[in-house]
Image 1 (cartoon, rainbow, N blue to C red):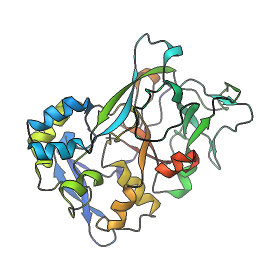
Image 2 (image 1 turned 90 degrees about the vertical axis):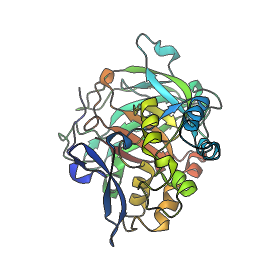
Image 3 (image 1 turned 120 degrees about the horizontal axis):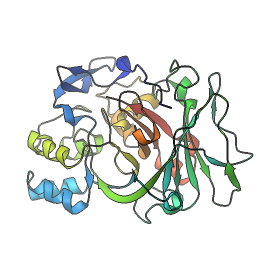
Image 4 (image 1 turned 180 degrees about the horizontal axis):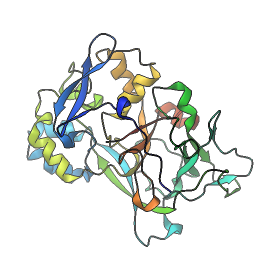
Length: 335
């Protein structure tokens, strides 16, 4: 079973023109961003790996001073990889299959549309200890659900900018002491193929036009836009792209965006889309959100999010500390 391929063309934050991708930058009055052409790999591709490898790469293209500042902006994340023949009993997570939930826990539903599909589970106790800079629970299981269009042939879209659709994506936390059982999927929902995921710690980098990087190297530059600095040089960006360009499945760290930084997307949504891109409040709000999880399209699970896209859940650190997973925000991006 394959996820519905949504027609998201009118809602994308980038456009394609003769193979060149356009980053959306500063907009005119009313907040509509204007496109700025950059090379095709630059949107949707971040790099990941060891801190030493990333520092060595940066030193080949940046001064030692700039390199150390850039390395200081890296964030630890946990990569989740489907490994052929991996033991499900040793896996840190799973794509698809059926969730284990207490019998009295309601299956997430979007009122007026129907039950959500189960996407993934993460066993918090099996993640590498001390590998993240976000306050995940030490134990228990995180369950991720999304209204993927199975029930309406993709008619209803779950979009960050549409508050009415926010109930179409949910995160549940099943505590370790809960008596959880495997729950059958509701009528009309075909489960995705089960794919065990193994975890490894890594460092993650983000785009130079991400607010956290821009504020260090290009304060005042248009949000989401390339600016005049060595970290935006074509040589450095190409080198990062060659090191790693797969979105992948991940917990914490910098999100691997398919388009513009997902934090900007979420910030624009929670501010009701009324704040123009040159308003400092948008950048400030973007800084209030951290990646909780991202799940890429996955052939082994028969998951396809739009045109080879990815699903993202973000959360404010204070809500994560209080285990208020119902406050997590969702967005998705595709090519």
